[in-house]
Length: 416
Image: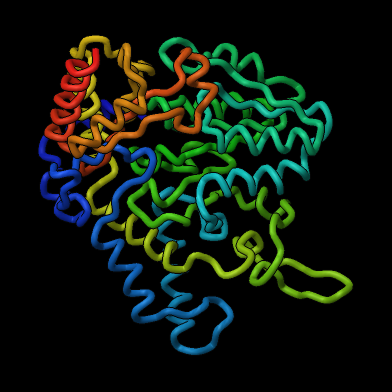
């Protein structure tokens, strides 16, 4: 994504007004107003999303697809309307390409265990990058153990940017799949995913994109990207936990075997064998998270009303402001300084463990994340056990970042 494209939208972004849509932001924590800066872990939920889940349980709670009574019909309609909202949001060709899962992790595991086990064998290669979340590393390691395939990693540089010359060099005759993050959860680096996809496709290699940290922060068009799979989680998009999406091109999904067996993914069952349901239901065994899907649809509607382009520009402005504030703090070192970044401020402070920083900030009502962020190889590369990470959302303000900087100054004065 090119943030400069969105610059015209950011000047009048109504963050202060939007904060009123999120009930939890009105509360205090440890005697201070809440400054919530842990959005890469999970976002808060607007009242519209909370109401949508509540309305399902209060008014139309029933199982879907198989019922003939009115409640089941209404629940099915709401669930499938949510699927259409997702299709529109990421510009998939058809709802058959939208598979509801529990989240990004399940989506990647589905591809690994269905597409991967059917198409990879001994000596075949899977290419990822040094930026990846554990959810885009461990499923491929398990697949390699099962099939004899080999995991290859394109390294990053000291800014947290993928070495693209090495990425291209590692695309070899045995590469069978590429899996890359759209945005790094640990550093905020925005990968050049369109370039990566084009390089892979030139060699006939399909690409999965982990979009968990992208969909709430930049417009995503899977047809324009040309990706073969795209995975994301609802809870990082102002939607409920336990709901996510796997987009897959129809031709690939049609050819893939089911991953899990059970209700709703079958057409016929006998003791001699079974046949499978149409897409996307072939990959949706059992009763789904119906309320979660409805909540995801409501969250997407909310995001579309705000305007994803507007959010992208506003968060970039906050990122610049926060970077200026933090780099003035004595002993603070930013981890991840890629030229193209999303709204993540990851840092360490000399003499203070990240967990201690998180505790001190919490005492001031400032919520950040401290740890390895499920990206231990990234921490190993930078030679740190953990970082403190402040991550931005559409409801954050300069005042939130001022309070972060003030609390960090106090921590440095207190302990260093």
